[in-house]
Image (cartoon, rainbow, N blue to C red):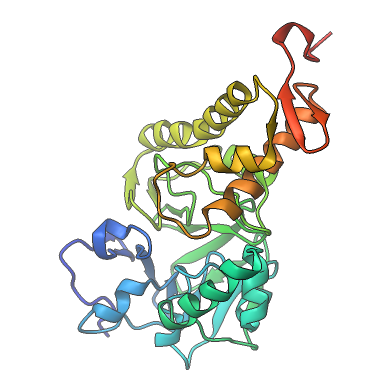
Length: 310
């Protein structure tokens, strides 16, 4: 049985095929992963782009690396096969209300985004979603897919190691210049940093991302891109400390933009900036690097007075 309809930019890695998304997998599109074993086929993160193909890839099961709108946008194309999600993110696909809780948007933005998720990303609730855990292995027949829980982007975000092809699917650890995204209610800066350290230790021949990069070959090239990706966190912190040389309110921090560029027309940018920078502020206060000098206003301590190693 043929399971992989041809597309000009699809990438074959043995029994793994990276199904290229439109615009190089840029949001709202993405690069899905098709894993074909001798007994079963698994489709990972069916993207919005799949709907535009002449022939849909065949699959026995759909697995989502996490529950975000762009990663489940093609799930509706497979209503008669099981859908799989990590147990921490599984509630998000059971109802639209639960999906919206993942983001934690302000009421006005949430109302509009609900419509976007249903109409543009084809969200369909799936109460019978099948959950999995860290370390679970899906044996497809001569091909195995091992789950590695990699939270931070969401609570249940996972990366997948496909063997024996030795492909590590990174999901939204996308190695892009944008850097790590931890701006949802279900996101965590600290967890994302732990995840980055964990995946850095995973050796593979191929590394595949849902957005932008697609496929990276070899550990040296992967580490170079991963280190640049992770360094964005430090860049944001340095910019925030510089901005806090004078007392600033949370509203001023949000308006300054540290995650998105000031001119980016992103409706939910303020929500993301607030959640992201709140995590950095809390860390700085714990480290003695920033003080709340008056209610709701923050200032960086002079370098000479910051807490440091004894």
